[in-house]
Image (cartoon, rainbow, N blue to C red; front, side, top):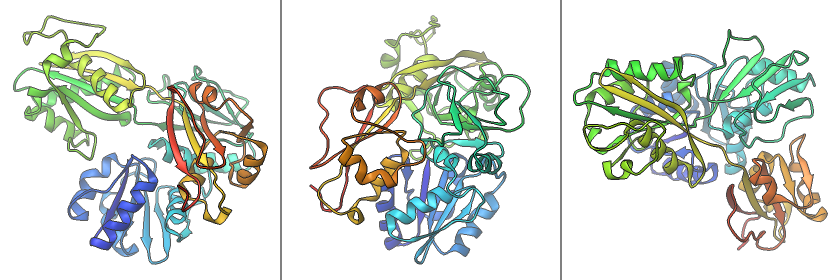
Length: 426
């Protein structure tokens, strides 16, 4: 999640405009900045402030805990987008592109492909990101393990992928980047950077009056026994009549989650809706349905997937009066349809340029690709055709064409976005 905070009507208008460019993960919370920031901080991947730099520093200073997990912070101050905290250089440059400002980057990881990887996946990162980024820039061999198959941006040639099923460590490569929502087995390894995307929906079923300690203990078992990294939780889900259970609310807050509409939400569903969802471990519950925890997790994941695939990530774990289970929103490929139009390069929209930078494969005619080649990241593959097939196989694809934009007919088993290529284009 990217939180965008602003004071005053003009600042909020600019924040809403920026959110439209940054995509569905960008949130502009209502109300005063301070309380909203404190409420959202544990769930933010990044934060952008339309405030003076000094004011932004005073707001975030009491909340900063760990440079490996704190959100990246960008401040829009005057004519500048300033990266203040947490390897936010890539976001600062992106904000500067959208708003026509000058980016001020401050860390040694400027332009690191890891920054953009973490930002695109709305992920938590753990490990020596600066050291790994420097190794990538020096051309050292780096292993990229992506066992769940997330669509990733292009990487330099010295970053080699392992496909989608390998957690292993290649000892010929000094560094490993692991993109996964699970905790690796075995002792921690040196020179491993973990990128933890938010993919999980945790279903919660409980008896009436369940204490917060029981819910917290059950959540801990998802990590200890189920092997899940709880930083990957995107939402919670339960039976609608359980929304008033104070023990559930208190446990989520103890773990750093707030179940309002702008953070990791507590999704609720009626019993009749949960009763028809097939689950791996049905039971005869007193309320007359075969499952709450597993069914709610699967139902919530399906809602957040936008029609994509979901699976059980951890089967139900029982505690004293409480049951929890986790479902995973499986990643899908991405197909961005970018219409270049007749305009000049300086009229190209920031959104179009962002999609071209995030793509690992660009598909289009030789003429169209030549017009955007200077925007492509090192390692980007270029193809003349096959955009749909590549996206359905899990790649991040940008399909470039002239006119009003490329046309794709029929269903596509990937996330599809259409991007206006130049300002003023219909």
